[in-house]
Amino acid sequence: MCHITVISLATRHRATRGSPDWNPTLHDDTERLVVRASENIEQFGYRQELRRGVGLTDLVSYGLAFMVPIAPFAIFGLVYSRSGGMPVLAYLVGMIALLFTAASYAQMVKAFPLSGSVYNYAGRGIAPPVGFMTGWMVLLDYILVPCLLYLVASMAMHDIVPDVPVWAWLIVFVAVNTGINLRGIRMTVRLTRMMIGFELLVLGLFLLVGVWALLQGKGHGFSLSPLFNLETFSWPVMFAAVSVAVLSFIGFDGISMLVEESTGGSAQVGRAMRVALVLAGVLFITQVWVASLLVPDPNGLLTQDSGTAFYDAAAVAGGEWLRNVTLTATALSWGVANTMVAQVAVSRLLYAMARDRQLPSFLAKVSVRHSVPANAIMLVSLLSVGIGLWMSGRPDGVDLLTSLINMGAMAAFIVLHVSVIVHYALRHGSDRLWSHLVAPLIGMGILVFVVINANVLAQMVGLVWLGAGAVALAVLYAMGRRPALDGMPSEAGRR
Image (cartoon, rainbow, N blue to C red; front, side, top):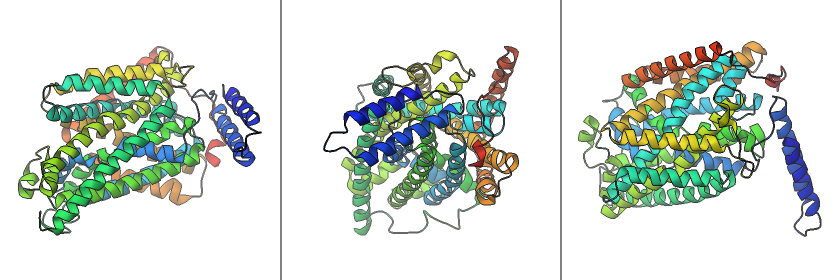
């Protein structure tokens, strides 16, 4: 299949040679790039089945859409209350911690440029059974992320249009995104860019009106307390808040799922992850700082999250119209843009594990027409509807899903750092101490502290899910399907 891709490009190259817009250097570089990327896939025993057509800007847009530039709108109150009124510090610490994680992703995607992300990195960097367990843990994150997003968006739309029940909105959002993703990755990327523009427009409007309101004497005036308040600060409190704030960042890692569809391969993916993470961090910090200075009852918010804290701050700044604008933007960005790319990421993970015979083989089927894992996309859609409808009937549905998602992601990120150390420093004796030993240790240490200070329920569910994964692994062994990954060249880690 990879040879067909290259031949197709070469044919198109010849067919357009006479065009006045033809650029021989550009076309030759494109061909060499695709050939090189295809060879990277072939050395691991796979065919190039997914279509390469995603550039750097597309990857950054995808990552931003997954994280959602206005993600703090929905969880601002929870982060504010858990951080002791220092949400800016919580987001800053979260960004710094995940920059170390992004660096480890860049190292591992360079060694193993395959869909499946941390599942492949742990499996090939440490051992296949570890890869299975890591993939199992990150599935907790990736499967539940779309459910949470659909639920939050549906609840927001129900507030705007009360006559339509939450479950109906949820089904509409799932159906729209499934139809888009089944059409192919290019369709997803184009709509992602449009949604990013919409979200940035709403965010710019909030910041403009919010800063103007502060200058007019509304709110509490400019203060550094959202960044640091000695009276309420403690590291356990802060890391408990970080464990919630990182929910806004989860999704930058989804960029690595598209390495087999990236025109620039692993180097482009690593760069896109860092750019997207920094851009999102700056946007998050700016908006929560302004919102913190506008909340109508900061002392009350410290004791209990109202669930509408950000929209209340928007109302203080501009009135009910701005509250409704930010509420609608949350519904559309979480219900369409974010869920659309989340569905892409989890379907690629299911596809990668299925083609290695560690999940049912029907999940590895790729649509011939659109070059997407169609069965995996459909399964994610059905799970999103089922779990979303179940959680919509629980009063603690949003909080429960949030806790579960973060624990799966943190566990997978910790194993990612271990993979870098084992694969590069121990197995291949790398002398790049910062990249392959020190930085992963720092990133791992921060994340371990976050997990220790996380919600107790999240810790318990994480352990239960880990136990279920161990049972699933034992079943694979009993069936004679011991996790194994072919095509693990010894030279992969020395580049």
